[in-house]
Image 1 (cartoon, rainbow, N blue to C red):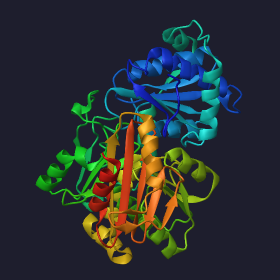
Image 2: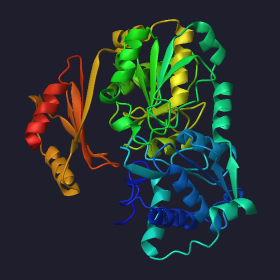
Image 3: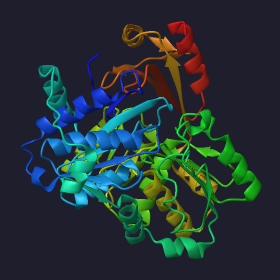
Image 4: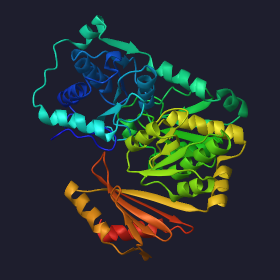
Length: 464
């Protein structure tokens, strides 16, 4: 099967498509695609997460790049994906490679690319790599081993975790957080975010050890995977719960009652905090599946709003080109103007802690303030495993012909990414996942919660 980039990099099942041989191929194709990059003489950086064989895969990739004549800085331990973004940008490197499959189940691994600005590499560049792969059946990988290249100075270790922690110290008011008395609990989900916040602010850490099986669950920060932190908050009287995914670029938040705060409200809270308290300016960019609440806030403040297809690479592109205050997607990925044109779950979690310290209010009260100002928005997503890609395409086409769902009349259709049906008081989006064999179905209603009615009806219509 051809190696193709999805919503966020190339991902595949270990020992099936994700093999050392295929990793060598995609590394070599990347090296060839960007061998004339203006900064290639400065080198590239490679990092890796806590997944099975991630370190060995990273060393394999480094070996290929170094044999191609590219200087490689490889992290001396597992790191978060935002760490690779920072190292790429701040050290003036050509790009960064992250060996991770993010939130996917344990049997997956992946290959993410970060550009020279620290953002997700855009589709135009990824197509170039795929073209090199399509045009080459046999690559010359060179003969030198990782250890030989390390000895020759072609590969060099870099202390990525230390660099990232120092970045947090300089950008977050950690003293204000520590002095506020805000009680914090953090769930690393066995991912590479573990050990980052511990020395900076006072937290209780959950699932903060290396476990490549992720305890039998996917390291995805969605409510169904997070019963542990919810119960811990209730028992321990914590003010906030923070969760990051497998490579710690995405975030989930819990309030002081142990209630999951959906990503739409997370987005809205950070947006209003940056406008009102940090006095920052700029546009807003959202993914296609994000809430209309964001549009309402932007209209209130006269802020330009951009809507892009799903995949943070589209958000990153705009954050690099335009003056963007915040960019966010439905799945908990948020990029901030004063940090990176990229998601960073730990940084954003600490921003929430800073917000509580500054506002001196409970998180549930801040959410109530948003609802009192802009109304109630109800949001829900379900994922359906399907037998084939053909069936996914068939169902998306079927959605385009619907005139009503759950008694709600379809007033218009938007096909920017999948098929979005718009109603008077909400919308429904059907699209194929770019990282897993899934059909994703999203819906939102305003004022009255009809999300379950809509999802049940669409499942009946699709015979799911």
